[in-house]
Image (tube, rainbow, N blue to C red; front, top):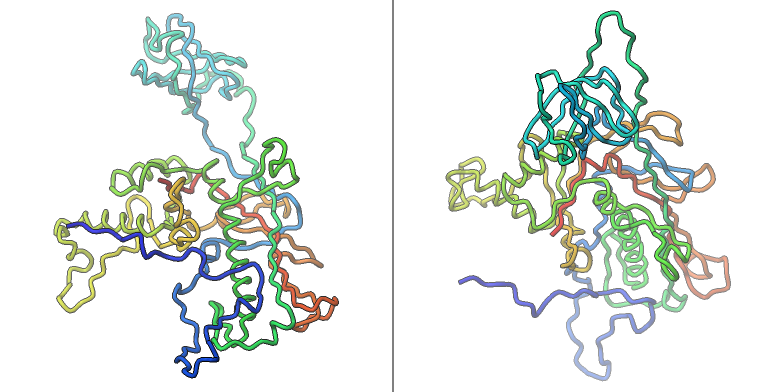
Length: 459
């Protein structure tokens, strides 16, 4: 009989933080009028393990300085151009006119034309080109229009070469190299932690620890370090989730002067590839993904960052390829025995391209993406390696990771990750405030280069 995880008791979504640190935040569960003291555990139990989710960009990207409010780069365009949505027009014996605005075809070039409506593919040579149409003379004997004039609007055409007669002039006009110019702007991210001087002098009975190894019986140490870890998560999540502000009318973020920035999810949805309607869980599904990648940059190695369910779907898909795997126990090295811990997972596979998979904690965390049900992201495919682009700051070609962060910096100011203290406590002595304020700031933007090689997997 099938079971399920019960809704109650569940997981806490707000286990710790409050806006300020006050004496009431300190753990105190004693009634000192009671003659019996309880046994106490001094060390705080880490029930959620490592709670930070900031690891994705460190694994796949790099951080580079920038000294401008605007980051621009050029990416190579296609070497060849295929035009779609061409309309078949006037036919005379052996020749036909096709309507399409501003094609870069030139007289003398040979083309392939194809239509699914007429179920026909023909080859010919360009004999005339205007701003709105081009004329093709067929190589084959055509006494009637191979493409139905005026009704066929799905003709596809591309150049495969050229032909010139003896003693004629060369090619008319030339083609300029095509490139796409992309840009992004950095945003300023801030946070602050504050504790009064009196609270800093209060000793707690619980030994606190944080993910970065800080320990002590001073509760404010824990709170300060958690603020720092939380800010580091914000820096990464902002680069993943951010969207540019658009004019949404009065009171919109754009109207109030906020500009936003292009995060990874936004960029992939705009210029990359998106899989929706459930996880790809069969080889046929991945064949469709591979077919799309073939039409893009064809990067040989790719990394899949997945939530748990998607990871299991891929494990099940790969296990099913073993003809002896019905029981789920014989794939791998086929040397399992009753005393061996059975490995039911896979780290990757190769099918045309190499795909390596890993869990992405951010997509599993119940307080973050793992707690969403609408517009849910199940994973992302990131190409491995780097690409060459023209960097307008450097003024030359540069090799950059497909995914990397640019932060504001100059010879006198580095805004990658700034932190400073103000107040009159905890070592600070620059104001009359009886407290210690720890400030955090970063100014950064994410450059998603070659977004056409990325895949976003959504429900």
